[in-house]
Length: 175
Length: 117
Image 1 (cartoon, rainbow over the protein chains, first blue to last red):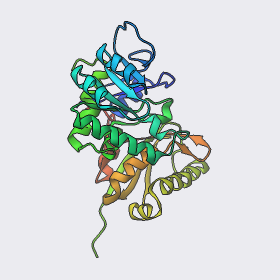
Image 2 (image 1 turned 60 degrees about the vertical axis):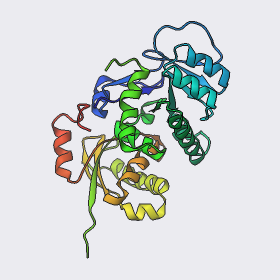
Image 3 (image 1 turned 90 degrees about the vertical axis):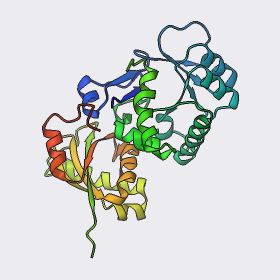
Image 4 (image 1 turned 90 degrees about the horizontal axis):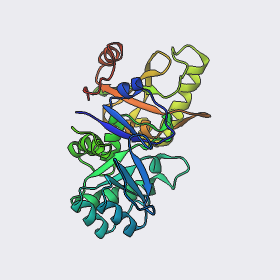
């Protein structure tokens, strides 16, 4: 099984580290995949993710080719989930928002992530879990991503699917 | 008395940790790691998991052993640790096994090729 992850623009890594961790490919924000704030509309080329907490802006991006939506408030309305399902868009859970020391209390963020996961799966929307690492210390191995996916409510099989196929689709991996 | 089953986890640090086990740096690292694990797991789970560093491999990798029943919690705790002492260090779980020999062989013969999970 091939595993993928999305890391932040400031995270430096080499191919050896990518192989040692067990990834087929690490997608870097700004190089392999773009992350747009939901307020900025317009035509995009290539894979991109839309981040924000304004539902109408996020719905616009879901209908206009975004590969994934990052709800920064870790919540999604039914209309947004419907738009995501109809356009094959993925709900992305970034771990840096949960793990980062300066973030809101970790248990509260884990609760919100678990609720988002549950809502998305009930609406038949695929969920992705990515490290979005801001530096090397915040990177995670596939085993750790799978463990964290199980923590927010995924079963073993779907947790592996999240880190392989769903994460791969964010960067346009063709397999 | 039933013998507790153990699980061995191969971990790599994002920064050098002063491996070899004999240096002062490694001693500090061990103390900081146990303190961070106690903080993440909580006192009761830490006691059940009973994590111990079994072997250092090079200056970044090491093998930590814990009880089998607390193994999933150990994976999560290692993922949550981002600071040890006064240094920013991430810990990557590369592989786990029921024997230390399998992990040593894994590390010696090329490590993770992305298809062994």
